[in-house]
Length: 575
Picture 1 (tube, helix red, strand yellow):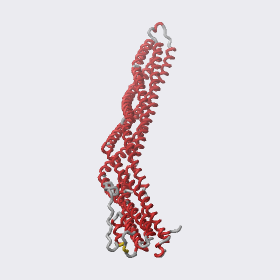
Picture 2 (picture 1 turned 180 degrees about the vertical axis):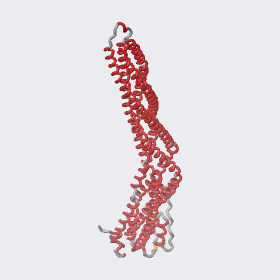
Picture 3 (picture 1 turned 120 degrees about the vertical axis):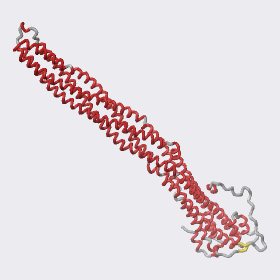
Picture 4 (picture 1 turned 135 degrees about the vertical axis):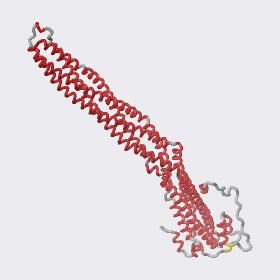
């Protein structure tokens, strides 16, 4: 593609008074005018957006300040401590119940041993009663043996031994049920104890740690408010510098339009063409110099502004997002809620066991009461048997010996029954303690979901909402900075283009000054200048004609006068 800027620099000076070269320069300057407006309008939009992002950093800080003022985190910490306390109390109750259940199982094994010995005694008693029945059947009882009711003895003994068998069967069955349900409860209590212990050491501790860290971060952020405000103030100054540098865009465009005015009149001003060529060269060289300097100011100000905002995000506002604070809190709380749901379910099962245990021991109380009269009744039966045998004389000796064996077995059974009763009494005390602990633990566990956990959940949800709000603001800031990334490149490229265009006029830049003429083109050009800098350049290049009076600057009407300055640096972008 043909580069008319390069071609122009190779043209001899004489050929530049007319023809293609002046037209190319005029077109280049015209394109610059249009491009200047486009580039600096876009630059202004980006810089305004970046300055707006700086203002939004204060909005993020305001979110945390509001949380700090309301005491949201302090209250949440209190809920967290209460939840921790309740979980620890629940854990202590369950672990204590676990110890009692273990002791209950030990007592149950002791009762089992006693019941086995009683069953052995019962077997021997059945044998002795059978032997008594055989012996009684073999004895001949005559009219003279009145009062010797041997059949009554065997029947009473048989009935009493059967009662003992029923008592032992009931006791054995009750103990088997108690052992089975206790073993199941022991397994559940161990699971619950492990669950609570691991919860306290895991998610509960992590939640409390996260809450403490989060609260500390908010306090730190609150104490950093002054620093953030000071940084924001300095960044606003950088923003003002960059915005004020954007004024060069309007100045450059206006001055390029003046150069265009000169170039457009060259064909009709053959007697002033050389003077106007030199004037245009000086003007555009000065435009290029000032423009490049201003772009450097814009670049410095915008770099400070963007770097400062990123620093604010990194040092203060992004810490919360990097920690994923609210997400960690929510995740930890969800895990705790799942564990508490398991706790409540397990506690309900343990309460069913406690109710069953209570009923079993009520039944055992009746069994023990029935067994307490066994020895006395068996003693009475034995005494009656001995009296009956005495009346039979030698014929009753065998039966008397059998009655003695039966009484001894009854004494052996009676010796073990108090031991069983003692073991059962201890078991009932343990069971009462277990039931009491499990009832307390059950009430505590059932209160957790609607108590401390609900309060924690509401607090975490509130923090999550605030965190989401701050994250949205931070995301908006970052998106704004990302969208504005590289916005200086077109401004810099445009500055280089102005310098390149200015080099098209290098041939005329070193020319001597010229004397102007009254009412000439140069005089007309002077009348349209709005900047004193342009007038100074014009005076140096084109001296007024001899005896001519330099025209005065045109008086601007109120409508043409520039608007009064505003405190807002962004108001300086007026094109």
